[in-house]
Image 1 (cartoon, rainbow, N blue to C red):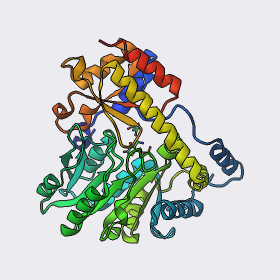
Image 2: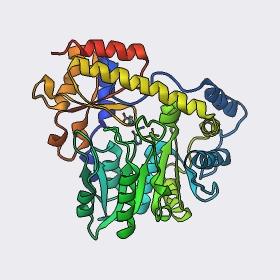
Image 3: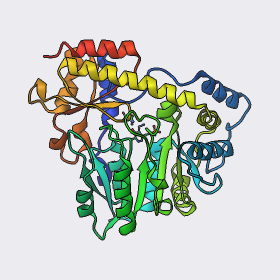
Length: 381
Ligand code: PMP
Ligand code: GLN
């Protein structure tokens, strides 16, 4: 393994899911639903397979049906209009979109400012691009970005701001004021923005606002989303990039040599998913909102300090009430102690001490599973 990647080891999600499996624990670590998305969308995938749509290499930018559906979805929810021909690129999940964007846009030695705690692939992809990550730490209890601090981190080497809203793992949803402040800095310093918005439909407090819609941002923003979270098909790995034609062409150049094209039949099914009526999106959100409250209440009763998330399907907690244990050690021991798996936020910080007592739980699970999990967690002392 080369030096760039050696530092990253095995992702925490694989490690904790394997531990959950080995110990037969309830897995509230890795974020994936235990209930599949709409059946009609599954049927659409089966139809595509049977009809031979997408069984051979689909077009590089994605099948036209999906590109049109992404455009219609962005118009419907945000009033943003993108050309399906030149401003939309289908990727193999948001993960490939992140990798391709960073590999396409960064020069070795460039600095990238990214929120911390960070989703783990950001750090690895920045390193693979030979660039340097500069963390803007979101601090408990509010996990808000400090825009003065952001300004102070910008140097002549800064090339790109990597945003994530709603934010995994803290659940922070950037407000219109925060987004305007960030956009103003991007314009002032002529920075690119890559924004990961995979939880765009999971916002409980406030609303999701794409930074690409703000003045001066269209030409400098690459927006990323994915079907995994919104439609509960994380295994299908269908994602997409939207942005100005020149930026999307750059990302496409990198994608050509990563995967060439993305898998075919699921693209047709997700095209149908994006066109589901508003009731699907509001119903999904209401369901997740109830689950958030169920888990938050249970975690509080079990003794955790809960940071209520504004969005995503994760809750960050503080384990200080259980003693002075480090979050990683706590998560390694939790399955044996009580049959529940979680993820330590400490691994999402450059300095693990900064997230030493933070542990993340997901609530994208059946109510009875969440209830059983909090019963088990209630036995912790
Ligand atoms: N970004 C964030 C913030 C995530 O939590 C995830 C996890 N799904 C991804 C990107 C990756 O998405 P995908 O599964 O579509 O590759
Ligand atoms: N996005 C999910 C999480 O944060 C899953 C990530 C993964 O498995 N790579 O848990």
